[in-house]
Length: 558
Image 1: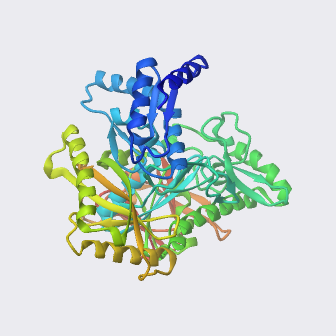
Image 2: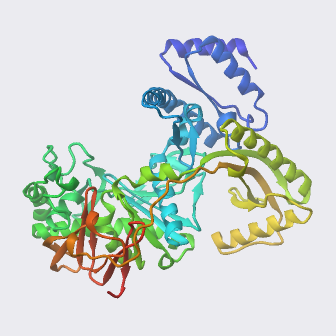
Image 3: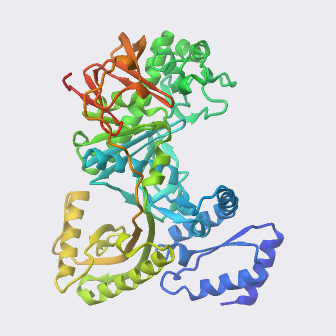
């Protein structure tokens, strides 16, 4: 290691105005000593620099992905660190004992970890929504959940099986899009664990436009919150999904944000006039087209996380949240054949609720390439025991009680000659025949993912993984009255609403805050609340459960 040459390079970087340094050496996942020496030298010569070390962040093979992750961490690290330092001081001043930060893997981490592993915060907000959806699914006894989050710019879909969100290590920042599809390999890979989300450019602020072939498109461009949709009266001129829903009577211009903000329906009509003219249709038909195109895009994202991954979408319930989702989710459920939609309380801030029900999570990985003929239970157990010791020490630092700890093992495996692995759960203790059981699990998972397996082929164990979890107490949600509630007091009036079949129907409008637990009513109708509006299509029954969730069921009787 040329420390003298390193010093010269660091001086040039400092003179050029660099703020952070990423360290990534080819085989540091196996031997991190040189990276540690470089880190020590940087801190000695340049103490104010932010240093991102690949062997600490991601001690895993595949140097390109490790390098990309380390560089991304170095890029956002100084900004995230400064923000967290300022936030920590602010919350201390108001008496908050401990500040925890959400991670993209669906768990919480300490502020110290967030500053050194800033890349773990990428997509952490949406991950919170998935964790909240998993919690609600457990509360109402649903084992298969689609988490659907539609906000102002994008819509995000993910699935939860038996309370566990799917997690991937193949996330990419800023990938290219082809149609409504992400072009895999076109972005910057982030190899740290991320809740597996499919994101499309369809949110309330997504802009409608006509392409060169004369076809109507929606997104991915967005008006955002500023200037926002044309109806916001903030200078926006482009037609958006929100403008379309205002025109179609789905959003009440006089009750946006609970009446705190008044929308300009005429501005929405002016914004859509250009598109309507190009398409040769009326304003209402143009608005209907915008909603249909957006719904088609979002329905494809739901099919992608279910049908295209071997799951039957009809077996799932959708938990819909974000300010825009309840307006359109029943149409999406119809499109993909899902019979139940769950709208949680306060859907506009539901992702934040996920932070409150998340656990503290630490992920560990160690690449040790072992072919099954060379593997034995004792060697594999020793690798996991070493990782568990590290995880237990960290949970000691977190002051997690012994009874609130959970250590989950898994290993990435592949057939010899393959280039990518599948993750296989591993039991907490591997006995003599335990390795054979792990290999059998791999064959089963391979069959599910790819439609075939090769039981007679050699298998390689590649990367060993451990999730150390500190279980946190969850906020108590009051179980309310189980008697059937009277809905008459919640009735606000009625208004005409345009539905997907082209009809205008005069719909009762209910105030969600005034709906009692066990309230039952039939669609078509509208349910308004401070942060969103729920459109209940005809043929659906709506019920408020004991926890305040709004359950929409297709074909349910009154």
